[in-house]
Length: 134
Ligand code: CO
Image 1 (cartoon, rainbow, N blue to C red):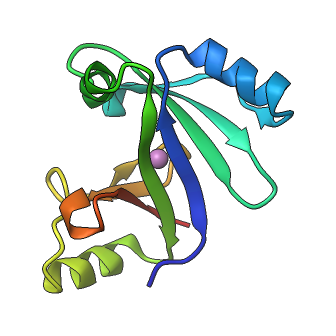
Image 2: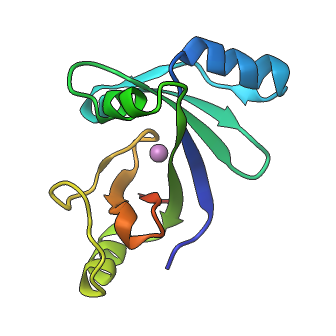
């Protein structure tokens, strides 16, 4: 069912500093910050030859990313995103096999404007999993 690794997401306490680390220290191509109010985050994407790194910082009140930063003040690994061809078919198959889909279970536009869903970490080896329709 799952296809390519689309990105790995890391929560960072200072988006500009993290972007500079990836750009200057690690020599990667780094996007401009983008606000995603529906998700309560500002994102920066780091382009790698085979995948991307999504740097996440809280945006607005009640961001789940703020809760994560409160628990992990220096930041940390947040989720991994796999591509699927058909997100509704993937969701229905996962739910039928007992996996829990977070939120209301309906795909929302993600960081690339494509539909995404999140799966419960307890069902996937303690890792928050994002599915993105490729
Ligand atoms: Co993501």
